[in-house]
Image (cartoon, rainbow, N blue to C red; front, side):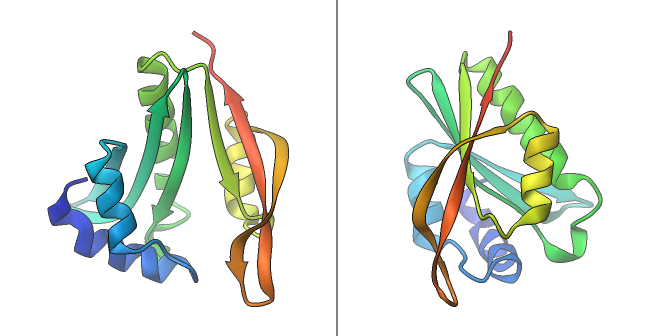
Length: 142
């Protein structure tokens, strides 16, 4: 991902999520040198992901696939790619948060070996106030 991708990344993010990240958040991730990646199909950006790596752990901060491209395995490929990047960095554990209501994402992470280790109360905004986040972790074996 580069600054030139942010218009498309933001458009995909806004169409995929009710509470999307802002351009500023993505810009901050790029400036912080997080692992920021895009998924391209026929030169079109159809998804993106952000991974923070440090202190022998990684945090999968954002995974998004454009709505009309969901269900084709791009999300699984992107997460697997970022897990490989984490492993190449010598990371021992990868963490992430996911909405309990996001059954598709939860199932994806479970099939990749992530396990729930906790909950963050009132983490995500929602129409009814706030929604908790399930904290998941994957221990990398190398």
